[in-house]
Image (cartoon, helix red, strand yellow):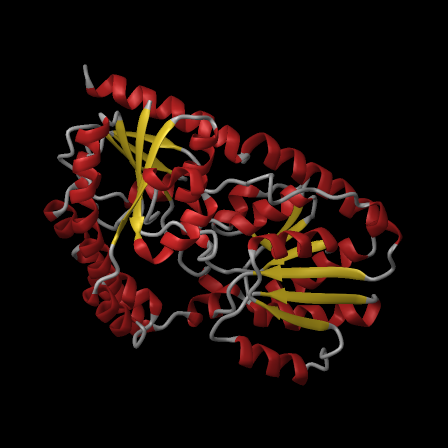
Length: 415
C-alpha cells in the first residue's frame, strides 16, 4: 500500500484531534509502509523533530497572511461560532493549498489511497475529491449537546447562530463534495452517521476515532497506591465551561471531610481564574492543585501517580483522556453521556447520570467516596480498564483495521 494522509493540523502538542494524523503516520512508517503526510507548516519543526528520517515524506502548506488574519478574527468570537465562520474559511483555504500538493504527490508516488482523518466533524466539507485515487475520510465523531438538565449552560444566541450554520451544511458539502464523493466514510457512532451530509455515496463503516499509544500511556505497579493513605484524584482537560470542573469542585468538598484526598487539575483555559477563586471560596486551597498545561509525557506520569481520574465533562463527543487513564490502570468516574459512555462500563469505572445539577454533583461525590474507601475496588477497576483498552483501543490494532479498510477501499474502487 502507498498511503497519503492529509490533515489540517498534525501535532502532539496541540492535543485533541491533531494527534490522530501523527499516530497514523508514526505507526505506518514504523511498519515500513509507504506513507506520506500533508499538513500545515505551523507544526513543521515539531514533526521534523519527531520523524527526522521521514522529512522527505512530509509536506507542509505555508502559514499565509490570510491564515493569520482569519485566526485573529476568530479569537474575538466564541469558539463554537468560529468553527462555522472564520475557522471554516481557514480550513477551506488550507485545503485549497493542500489539494494542489496532494494531486502532485498522487501522481509522483503512485498513491493507492488518500486518508483524511481530520477534522473529525461529520459536517465540515472536504476538498479531497477528484484526486484520481479513492479517498477514506474519518473516523468522524459529531459533537453532542448538553444533557437536558444542563441546557441552561448553553448560550441561546450561540445556539441560534450554530443552527443557522447547520442550514448551510449541505450547501457547502455540495460546493466541496469530498464527503459526498469519498469511497469510504468512517464514523465513531450512529449519531455521527446521522449527521453526515445527505447524498453520501461511499461505504460507511463504524470505527472509534480515538486510540491509545501504549508507548506513552504505560501502566505502572499499583502496589504502592494500595498502602498510601492519601487518595489522589485527577482531572485532565481544558478549563472551559462544558468540562464541568466547577461541579467537580463542589462535589469534592464532602470527600475531603471524610478522607485524606487531593484533587489535581491538569490543564488550562479561560475558566482557570474563576475555578481557582471557587476553590478558595470552598476552602479547598490545601486540597486542590492547579498544575496547568502539561506535555503528553508529563500527563502520563501524573496519571501513573494518581488513583482515580474524574471526567465531569457534560458534552464530550470522544474523550481520549478516559482511554489514556484506563491504559495507565486508573478507574474512571465520568458522565453517562457522549463519548465516555461508549468507552466505560461498570467493570472499569462509574458513570454518573446527568439528570439534575444536584443529583449529578451528589453522584460525583458518591462515586469518589466509593473509590476512596476501597483500594481493592480501585485495583480491580484499573485492571479491567487496562484489559478493555488494550483489547479495543490500542493504536496498533486500530492501524491493523485501517490497513484492512485501505485495502478494501482500493479493491472496491476498481470494480
